[in-house]
Figure 1 (cartoon, helix red, strand yellow):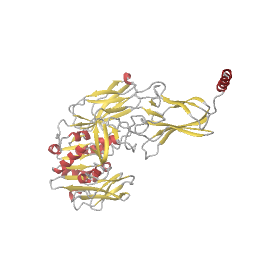
Figure 2 (spheres, helix red, strand yellow):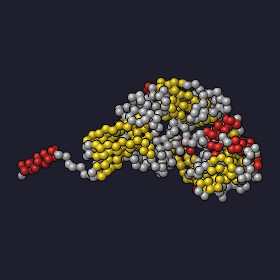
Figure 3 (cartoon, helix red, strand yellow):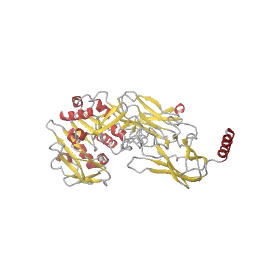
Figure 4 (tube, helix red, strand yellow):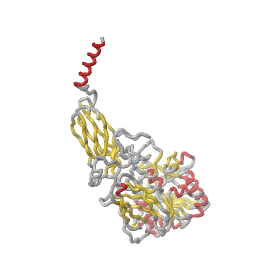
Length: 532
């Protein structure tokens, strides 16, 4: 009996050794991985590879490896994501029929490929059907099951979003170049003699300094900077560039050493900048933002910005306001959202400033900052909102994380009660013009503009605000775009309270984009003169 069992075992072993079992179902990719040829950058894994396609022979291509269990047609797609509401774009595609066994595919990105992460999607088709690997929707707390390639240019980000004038500032820089040139740019006013930076519209504030980067080519490195003591409060950009043409920027706000250096404070929407930043840091191929991930409620405040380091919509919003301030010769203090949140009370803010200007869409505001601004208004402080959707969401900062809560109007603090208008709609509107309707009620606003009731000006409408039942009584609608988006109007408003407070709201997110038009510039100058 034992001899019979041994014979059966020997026969079974011979059969198994002589032929592999036939594959069942669609073809499979076994041992799927990606690399850049043996030079991992910080954070790289078998599913994530960093590539810098600058032709220097280091990390110039992504290499995909797998074992195919049966002959199949394989298609590799390189996919750029935006958000769950926007269809991803295939930026590169490769197809070929392959035999069973080990294989190696290579994607060598073009030198001009934008620096960001890309999902790799593999479609494997055989006689029994097809399988798809990679490219699933973003999932909270879980990485992709596929592969991701990160294109590395120059990533730069300050360790804090704001520093006091003259204080030491620290920035993290990541690139695999042998050397890096760094230089500060800012907005010191009209007629600045420094080099003008085309991307930010800022002028050179410091000479170029070359840093030897040979010992930092495999991961980020923090560099300390000491901006000049003579620089005024304002927004500055650190520009880091390499000899092969890669460039990265890092914005930083220099606040005054003490509040009230000038009677006007301009708040830059640093919370909104990061909330709309689609930079992917965790390496799953999707932007680390709730705009990309419907299920996410947090954003990392320490990330470099996606567009080479410049915040989304910067030139059309806050940048346009800063340019107008410089042309008009206005002297102001600049604050980040963190600086505003650090003000102890509305009384302290009112003691320092007559006017607080929100230069961009300041959508995400914490409970303390909301109360400080409202108390400032109640004490007679003046407010200007030069974009749309302001004070829309409660958002609290914990360390370097911003967590979004509920809309303020659902928490019993509707934004229209402070701003005068509140977010009504977003979408494509065709860029329609405002129609003046408040020239009779507020003639000072339209003085020297050439505008009268019925006149039109500007082109607006990507996001629009309207009055609501909570709008303060006596609010004047200065101009309106009827049915700007769907049936939602855009309304530009002004109101005054018994305490002497005055509040102006532009009513559209892209108001500042028309500040280069004389009538719009004069309108803002008129409002500024009255409120400041």
